[in-house]
Amino acid sequence: MAGDLESDFMPCCGQIIKQAVNGSGAVVRYAGAKLAGQETRCTPEQIAARMAVCMKCEFMSVSKDGTARFCNKCNCWMDGLMLHKAFLTTEDCPENKWPKL
Ligand code: SF4
Picture 1 (spheres, rainbow, N blue to C red):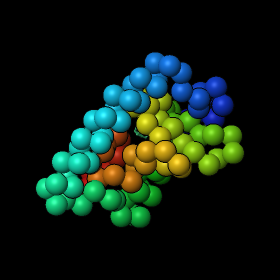
Picture 2: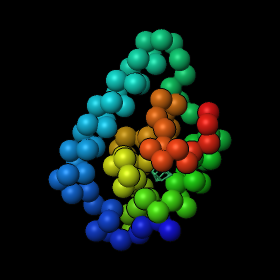
Picture 3: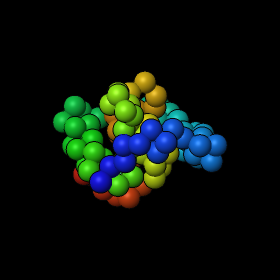
Picture 4: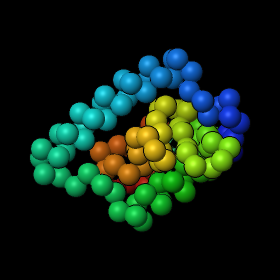
């Protein structure tokens, strides 16, 4: 069941460091795909399929107002105002739960 406590949602220092490392990798993968002329944006259907899995996942946390979602496994923002991991073709679920593109 997805977490919904604000304390689960707010990243700690360790999570912020992991976010920086994972975010750097995501930027490199994104830039590589762009340079290679590959599609980097998932379709709305692909995003919806990914988020449907995330919303049932034990690692997902949702802000109390429901406007932002955060994965406690990879320490990534899934949507909202931050890095949109679920929107990027170059990213994948760390637990291999997402449908393959
Ligand atoms: S990215 Fe994977 S591990 Fe993270 S919340 Fe979504 S399904 Fe769960």
